[in-house]
Length: 167
View 1: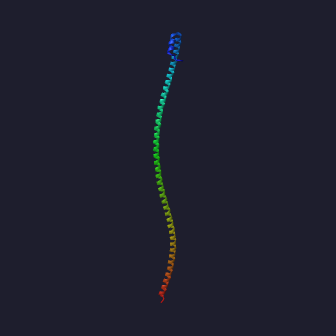
View 2: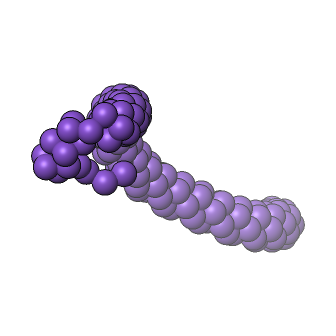
View 3: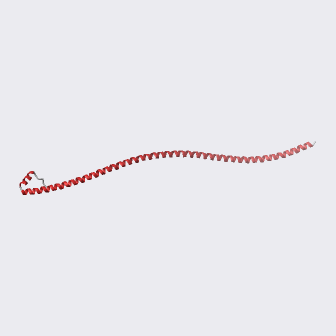
């Protein structure tokens, strides 16, 4: 509907029919304006509700973000603590490995010493058995010499006794 000028309104007021038509148009225009106003108010209320919901969602998103950042910070701190623990465990493992290696080295040296001692014992035992065999041979030789000397002594004594009796 077209907007009426002041001159049109005055001209319409001069005639009754025109006035009635103009009044009907004005009432229709006012109803249309009221309906448009009601629609605009409804749209405004809906926009305000949407805006309020968006603000609430934004506030909730900010809270979620802050909670996520706090959780992230806590996780970073925990990760740093775990790295420290891991480093300490690695250091302990390395120290244990050094101690184990030193103990294994000492055990190997001791084992080598024991093996050398066993070899020395076997060698001495073999030498002793040899010497025992040699001693047995020497004892037998000495016994044979003693028997031979005893026979010679007996013959010599007999010869001396014979010599002493003869004159």
